[in-house]
Image (cartoon, rainbow over all chains, first blue to last red; front, side, top):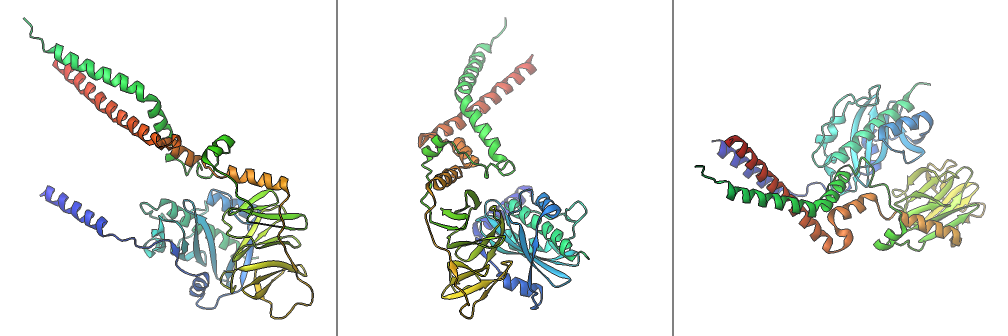
Length: 177
Length: 258
């Protein structure tokens, strides 16, 4: 009986591999303007810029584990909700990621553009939905564990880092005074 | 009288030992190379071996890594932007490595503005990247040229002109002819000493440590025979493992029979 079960599982696995398609490939999945319209229900505020320097820069680079590539980043903020469009390298090429923060928690994460040949599974809701309602702890880590995807570890790590950075930056612009 | 079954098994054991010894000696260097490069490649990303480069001239010559002629170069004021391949240089400093085109460079109060095909890069006077402003969504075509008017950036794209705000956070269409003259940036060749320095830097970015280790690991660094040599080393390793196992099992059995 056990042999039959083993044979059955092997057969199913082989069939899955044989018939599996490419699925989602690299590409531009969503334009920035469309993401903003979705995030702000059509009422997109004016773009603002935030200088990432001093202590803020140190904190961002601590999260990213490398030098932050720019001195200034742009964002959209309507008083409660902020949207950040950030690039972060997975293995070799940048992934463009949109993060919407509402209150002090993530409302939405979307991969807007994926440029590499592997790891594009991070674009799917089964992965990005994990970030909904995530908050930043005092140690700048998320308040939850994000399940990884086999074969997409670097992409998963990149998206997770960007989510943390977006929460940090939101705190910076939403802070009173 | 003791029946001896030892001589035959002793001969076999001696054969396995000899095999193990000689194959081990032959393969030692290659196996060491395989193991060490393999360990390094396993940690390539965390050790940033894919971001660190080898700049030994003799090795770059071996790989045929040359610097291309500048795709474009613009000077404005005291500064110059030059594009080699897709590597943008500001004065002598590498700035960004994925610039498809260089269409102009101007300097404003506090910023240098470098035009690419569908974006502008803002730099500090020291060449640090402030921001890359993506304009693809608003431009009717690729950026043709970049200029300055009243300390604001002006760009021409697809027959239209666009005017920046003082902080260069956005570009708005220029509906009417401006009252003054736009100072458009023009191409000029970089000075030879600067070009030499940029070319040497460009070459030095052509070979990552990761790539070198991969080629050592596979043997490709010595040409077509290299992978075959490494295959033989791998087969030797398999032989060593098997002969080692046989020797160990035989020893176990021998110890038990005593």
